[in-house]
Amino acid sequence: MSEQANAAAPATAADIMRPPLTTVEQADHVAAAAYLMKHAGTTALMVLDARTGQPAGIITEADIAHAVADGKDVNSTRIHDLMTTHPTVISTTTSVRDAAKVMTSGHFRHLLVVGDAGLVGIVDITDVCRALLEPDVSRPPTGTAQPG
Picture 1 (cartoon, one colour):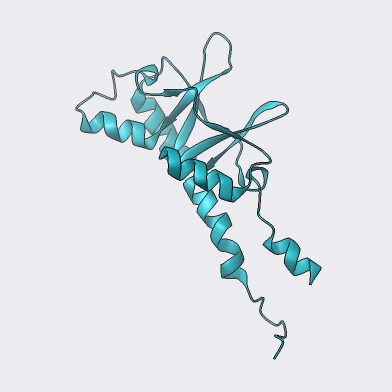
Picture 2 (cartoon, rainbow, N blue to C red):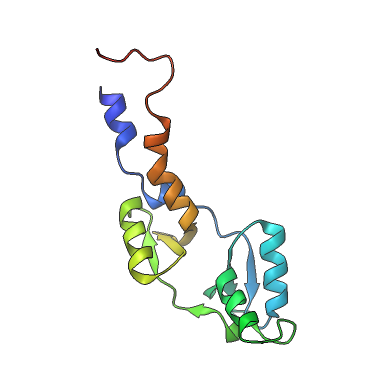
């Protein structure tokens, strides 16, 4: 019984986050960001300040799609023109349900995750949905007797 209760415990951002491995610099072209997203299989990139090497913001595929729809040239538009500075962050201990609430209330698809050491990861809407749906999808385990 306790094993089943633990499996149903809400996951935290630390459980579902991915490291923000793919980064770009603010002065790069938006076309470079789109290329990196495609080849990294991601929907958002951390934007680094070229002088400090520290995170300066985030750029998402939605940012790029909006720029294209507005008629901007992705080969001449710079990332700093589109990126979100000071994006919303959650902590590693934030529950998945709370992350979902932040995403829906703010209309975000990505949240940066911070821990004691600073930026440690990113979660996207797919990560959150998968974590919320997984317990329902995986039960009951096959081969387990059900009380009758």
